Length: 173
Image (cartoon, rainbow, N blue to C red):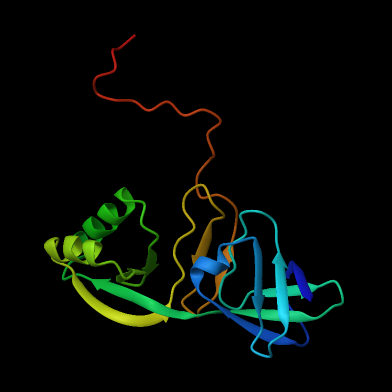
């Protein structure tokens, strides 16, 4: 079985491509099959999220390119930026994995979320698309260049050792 365990930035040649939905690309331990039928195991650093076009190398030097599978999603647009930000807020409030695009949001299909978003004035279009959600403030930060490439740069926010949640009902000391 081919074992992939090193993420690399560049390769002279690619042995194979592996098409995976997002749910599988966020697993650091995975066993699957290439299109050729060859079994492959992925062992990456915990917390690694594989993005479209990432390259993984095996101990024997073979390189496999990760391809984001097309998945059933909703593309969310709004008449105004304010309405789109409201939709983003409500999706975030529900901890919904969300892809942020140029003037649109994308989520996995979910009829309950669709109804909520339509109630906020959103236009929802069902589409099969590659799903590349944001990694979150405490995950590996990434940004999109508009050419389909994401680049990671560490956390978007400092990771608190201890976090006190302040509520209006807290007494002032």
